[in-house]
Every structure is written in C-alpha cells, then in structure tokens.
Length: 133
Image (cartoon, rainbow, N blue to C red; front, side):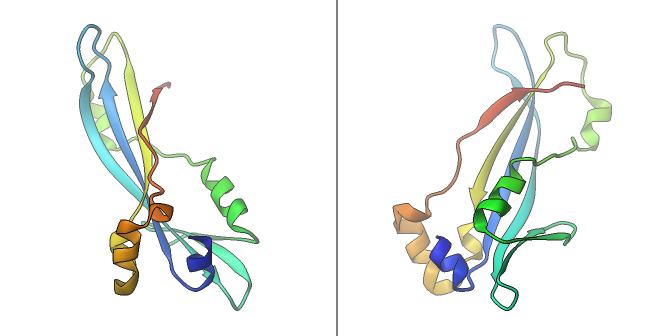
C-alpha cells in the first residue's frame, strides 16, 4: 500500500460514524449515520505526504506516512444537527466509528488487485464509545 502511495496512488479514507441510543435489555437504537472522508497522497516534488479533508479541502503536510496516520489518531468530529432533536435517554448514547479504504476511487487497473489482494484489506472493525458532554 505504501509503495502504491509513493507511486502516485491516492488513498481515500472514509471515517464512518453511527450514533446509538442505549437501551437496557434491548439492542441499542441506531439514530444516525454519517461519514467524513480524507485523501492521503504523496507529493513527490516536495517529498511530503498530504492529508486532505474531503469536505473542506483543508490540507496538512507530513514528512512520513506514519506522521500523517498519527495525526488521524487525534481525529475529532462533531455530531450532526440531529443532536438538537435527540430523544431523551436515561441510559445515554453510544457512538460507533470505523475507518475504511475506499477502493472504488482506485484507478481502474488497481481496482481488481484492491479487491483480491489481502494486503489491501485495511478496513477497521467498528469501535464503540459512550458519548459524553
């Protein structure tokens, strides 16, 4: 993956979010889903990696892939406008998040390789956290 990145292939990362209302003795009630995308690419002229927010086009530059990925570990998001109309919950809310590599954005020759090669299977599993004020 890093070799492809260094050879000009952009990696499109999708952060997927889910908001749940916690219900004791039942499955949590899913209230909202939303996504936020980032593009990671290598800029050979400057020998830097660029991380671009897909919605705002804001970009940061990094010396290494590791630095770029570590910056994503400090990722922050705000809940969508639905939070103003959330139903009351005595048990609180929970947020789920996972990160996926959007293989549909690969150049055509790489799409098949991305689907069949295990080295391109980089999607994370869902992680859940309680929502705090």
